[in-house]
Image 1: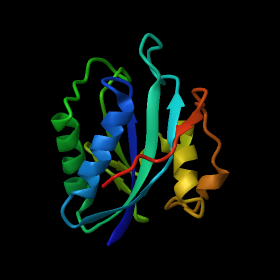
Image 2 (image 1 turned 180 degrees about the vertical axis):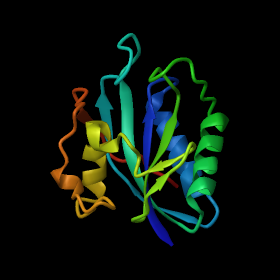
Image 3 (image 1 turned 45 degrees about the vertical axis):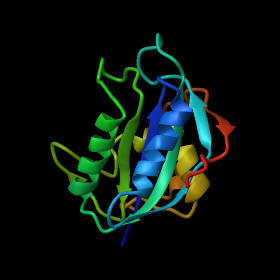
Image 4 (image 1 turned 120 degrees about the vertical axis):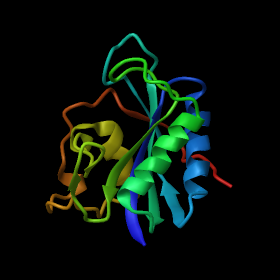
Length: 164
């Protein structure tokens, strides 16, 4: 089993409910176990400011799915929940990002591991540190030592969703 982390975000169609639905889907993935989820965090949008604020969280999984198979499953879940890409960094009912996959690195047209922007975003780093403050990136940097470029006025807005 490989330990991996998924970033979750939503700002449309009842964002907390969307994150809860996505977490249930992650827990139901084959050959995968949902270990835990961070608290929920609210933040201003990274992109265009004429959209609602976001709700974000990070989930920890163990899986035997290969990275691209896991990515396929995440994208399938986004489609199942009705995600439509309207504009770059725009509003969405759900966004699922594969942040880390064990200590592996990968660069391809479809997938970059670690996620190429995660170290810059407080809405990823703070929930990630909450559930895995002992975590190191594959390049040896400690997650707790990273300083994000974008804070988005991040604030904790609720406990982890109840799954099950």
